[in-house]
Image (spheres, one colour):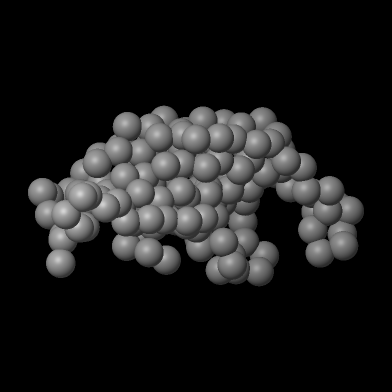
Length: 140
């Protein structure tokens, strides 16, 4: 996970409304433990770029992060997705040299996973949200 992705995860773990629903169950997309309790979140960087100025590095990095909400029911997924959105929209933190300047919701899509591992009794609801995150970075 990138440094910004790690900061995003730590920020969500610091939000009481998020942890009230998922505890510490926030994982990179391919690291969910088998049999993980629900609900949980997965996140990863879809892409990122370093901004440039006319004279070289611009000192900013902008990334697109996908956060998937996984829950037993659509209502559970919707509630958690709303809590995550509230926690991330407008998020900024850090010091002058290493600062998350802004985060914002780009898009959201509701999905139903018909079954898990071929078992019709293990259904999941999923909401996928993409967030933009702008971060100040040291210019080297």
